Length: 128
Image 1 (cartoon, rainbow, N blue to C red):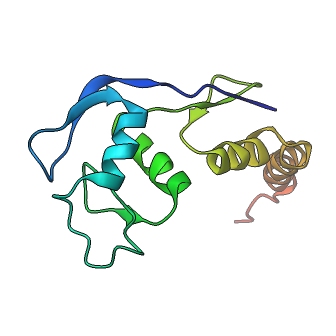
Image 2 (image 1 turned 45 degrees about the vertical axis):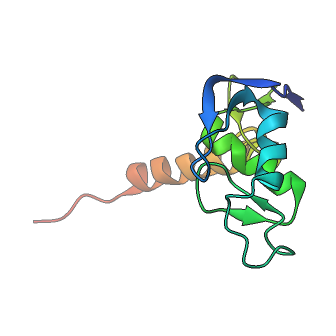
């Protein structure tokens, strides 16, 4: 129940904070640079296979660095089909669908509102 639109590029040039000679709008070049930039500190090359070009985040997994880069680029490729909501991660979209669009949640929200109204209606006036 979602649509995924991955961008090939971002709107603004992204610059590496570790070296002064890298700047691009191409997301695949960003990911590649996160793996190969020699100016990025890597005390443990196994755990720090990818180091973020814009902050001190690091990871061994390609999927994690791609997801992390979206925080800096603002890319939100996962779009809900039921509403205009967009988000950067699949898990974020799945949470949105679960809590906003699931039938169980709609029932829970209606029940909660009914309980509030019922309490208000059945409240006895205070005696003086």
